[in-house]
Amino acid sequence: PRWAIAWKYPAEEVPTRLLGLTVQVGRTGALTPVAELAPVRLAGTTVTRATLHNGDRLAVLDVHLGDTVIVRKAGEIIPEVVRVLPELRPAAALPARLPAQCPECSTPVVQPMGEAVTRCPNPHCPAVLRGKIEHWASRDALAIDGLGQKLVHQLVARNEVRSPSDLYRLERDTLRTLERMGAKSADNLLAAIARSKQQPWERVLYGLGIRHVGKTVARQLASVFGSWQELAQVESAAIATVPGIGSEIAQAVVAWFTDPQNQGEMQALESLGVAVSGQSFGPRLGPLAGKTFVITGTLPTLTREEAIAQIEGAGGKVTTSVSKKTDFVVVGEAPGSKLTKAQQLGIPLLDEASLRAQLP
Ligand SMILES: [Zn+2]
Image 1 (cartoon, rainbow, N blue to C red):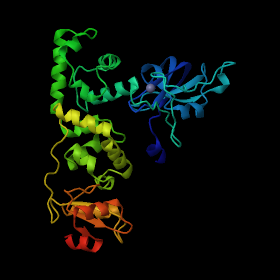
Image 2: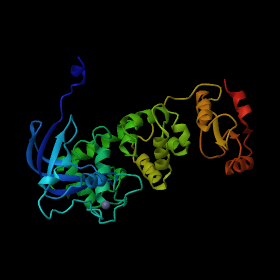
Image 3: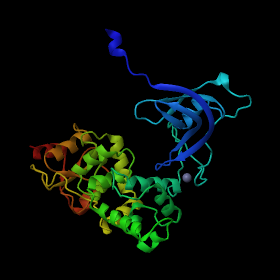
């Protein structure tokens, strides 16, 4: 019968009182309002906190301090506030809103147009730095045993660690000055940090915490792009041809790897012995194997994505900028400065027809 198919185990929902609001700042700078609740039993556990997701949701739910709220736990997700009961609101209750300044660093927060999330824009915000280091050390990333939240908190607060590469510069004497850090724990931690250098490139890529690059995307990228240098010079359209990777992700990856500060960090990691490259699919096969192409202008029939897919399918590589290493520049209508550069360097030019002639 129909009811048997439609029936789902209902998420458990209970009412409780909102005692206060705290705000967490994550590694992306996103501010998450967290409801502090009068303890309540929910799905077999006692719940004292629940997420309110973001500032927009706070406003939509019209949450007031002292409100009676309905809390829900569904599946593995942390409890969330699903609605409030305004009829039970105490008189003169104040609306709960996100602060105008970051609770960690006092920088005025921003909410980009069209986004629900409010962020601290300060890249040096201690909460953001802590979040990045914790992510780097997490089990699915570099898996650094013993580098927990409290330790990261201390290292960031003391300015000892401001980026992942700083971890690999830590010395025993510095660690010994931290709270509850004996000689043995310091040595264990240093050993764990050193071991993490052997983690594969895909984990490093995930650990960098690039927007939209989760574990699966990192694995996909690492299997196609063997090093960070490759990712720093490839066209975003070429990244978008990797299965499962859309143009939004591709653009985020390119933006990250072309940022000079991030490039400095990658160089630092590399010089400290962290695996910033790995085994890609290896030398590509096909008639264009070993050849590097640059595309400029609009081609008559092929879109940029199609052209890249065809070149790569034939074993070639497509990069963004023309250099002495470029073998061919494919020129379409309204070409840019890449054409001028190619002419200066004397690099052979192809139109779409002559490109097609080289394809299998
Ligand atoms: Zn901040």
